[in-house]
Every structure is written in C-alpha cells, then in structure tokens.
Image 1 (cartoon, rainbow, N blue to C red):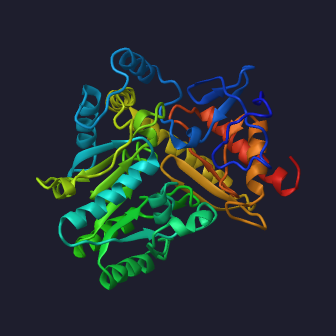
Image 2 (image 1 turned 60 degrees about the horizontal axis):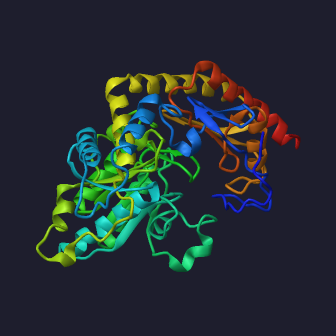
Image 3 (image 1 turned 45 degrees about the vertical axis):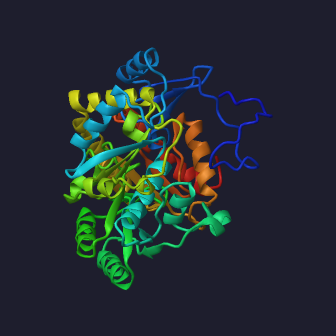
Length: 426
C-alpha cells in the first residue's frame, strides 16, 4: 500500500505523527471499498468515520453533484437562497420527528451542535428569562469546537483546552440497570438550578466508547425536560440516517427533541453538510423587529448548493429504495455474528444498536489510549479491512451495501486479531 512522501506538510486529525505509521494513500472508492493507487482494496467497515451510508460514490448522488456544479457552485446565504437548500429543508422537516419546523444549515457535526447550543441560549435570552446551564451525559462526545468540547466529557480529547471550556452539569451514563440513577440526577439538576438545555446522543454514545442505552430512558428524559421547561437537544450526527435501526434514533423513544442535529449521513457521506432543526418556538424567539435578537451564526459555505444537491439525492434514495430493509438486514447479520462471538472470553460487553456493533477486547490497560488500539488497526489493515478501534473497543459500522460475505471477513478478522494482539504479535 502506498504512503505519501515522508515530508508531507499535511497534519492529520486524531493522529500522533511521532508514533503513527505513514498514512495510506487512497486513489478511489466504490461501494464498501477504498482503492489504493496500486489497486489494493480495503473494506471500509467504519464508513470512513461513520459518514458513508449507501456506499462510496453512489451513482445517484455523484450525478446530482455533477449536475449542480454546472449550474450554481456557491452563493452567500445571508439575503439569498436557492432551490437545493429550499427543497432539502422542506424534505428534512417532513422526515424529522413532528414539531421541528425550521432548518439551519452548517458544514459539520461539530458546527451543527455548536449551532444548537447557541440556539438554546439565544432562546432563553431573547425570551427575557436568561438561562445558561447545560446538562450533558457522562462520557459524551459532541465535537471539537469550544462549545461542543464543553458539552463533551472532560478527558484526553480536550484536556489542553480546559481554560476555554464552560462549565456543564453532568449526569451519569444510563447504563443497563442504572437508568434510574441517571433520571434522578437529571431531575435533581433541573430542580437545583434553572437549566437551559439537556444535550444527549440518543441510544448510543459514539466516541465515548459506543455505549448503548435504552429508548425508554430517552422518553423519560423528555418528560423530565417538559416538567422543568428545559430544551432537549438530540445530537444525531452519528445516530441519524438509519444507524440505530430507524431513520432517526429519537423515533424509537417516540419523542421529538426541541433541537435536532444532523450531519455525516446527510449527504450519504459524499460532501460535508450539516443541519440543525428546531421548533417553531425557538425560531420565534429570534424573530423580532429588534435586530439585536438576530441569530448571529454563519459560515461562508452555509447551505452550499452542491452539498445541498447531494443531500437531496440522498433523501431521494431513502424515498425510492428499500433502505430501511437494508438497515434491518445488516442489523440482523450483526446480531447473528455477535451471538457467535459472545462465547469468546477474550471479549467483554458485546453490544449492538441497529447497524452498529461493538465489543471490548480484554486488555490490562483499557481506554482510548490503550496500546491495543493502534496494534488492532494495523492488524486489520494487513487483512485489507479498515477498522479504527477506540482503544480496546472494536466497533463495526459498515455502509448499508456491505454483503454477508464481506461482514464475515470483518468478524473473522476480529476473532483473529484478539489472539494476535493479546500474544504481542502482529
């Protein structure tokens, strides 16, 4: 596999260049595979950081991008609009849980959540009863901008930036059997101090360790928020677009958040685009003859027409093709393979949430910085598979086009990797 020149000026994300091997050059992609310049194929079992849903270079989305690029590439979105954004916004409102009425476009998951936090604080300030307290779950991860790092768990991801971060009230992660402790802590936090918003990753925490929790707990959180007039922000950047088994994870709890954050699969993984949906009440709090109540947020590429065209094409696939059947089939394939691997005592906490499967390799030193992580990734790549463990946590989040045979390759590699890594080999 080809690596770039040793003196590349590129600084890669979440990469310790002093210890990481040289990055692998990718020249193309199709379906569930990445292709190197030499023609070697790598099975993309994590959807290239969770963004690719239908498969790489889906012809329908590629065609929409090409067509839009020839008509309108970019226009300022303050004071202007365009058809792809208008159509996409209407489609998102139609597809989202009922009660979400407005769409604010941005360009990444972090900015979608940053927008949500600013919307929530702006709502309370403009309503004349300012609240600034945010409540979040233990182990949460919401992004890498200052606001999203503040809402996320404190740890190795953001320790260097602690002086920049604002204080957040944290409630325990609702692990199986401990849900009531979480709900009691949320109730107590709401009673102790006026809370502006509760932010959660519905049903599964991603970078925090692929930690699964129950829809019933999310529904009860919605009820607590309603009792105390607290806004609920659902960060569905990862969980949206079928990953948890339904189009949006909130559906499984039968709830509508006040604010919904979407990104990653919004364009099927083809272009960066994010959307923050909110209720009429939140929009109305910013709607005023007083220009000081304007929602002051933007990026130069807000609602980029080409990205919006990709988003529309993605929605067309959801409407015209049996995507949820593919999702259900993939979930079933995971379930059977996890059941088989569950008897292997080198693994612990075997779990699943829709199309996402995860398990922990038993090692002496666990956590995100566990040495097992890089060694596991190196082993998987040697087998032509892209898996990027979170320390000793191995997870699989493949595109929906993955086949039974391809998934079997992934699980065979996981079984083999455990023996190799635990023995100290490669």
